[in-house]
Image (tube, rainbow, N blue to C red; front, side, top):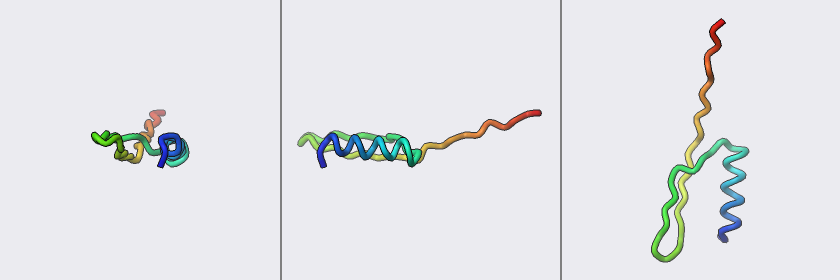
Length: 48
């Protein structure tokens, strides 16, 4: 997968699937391993 294709895919997951980059590992041969995690959206409790 090309770098631009991977960037597009990660951007779509981040925007629409509520994922964020957890870890990016670069190997000596130039390849990459990307790990995503689900973003936690915390709700603020209303105090009336």
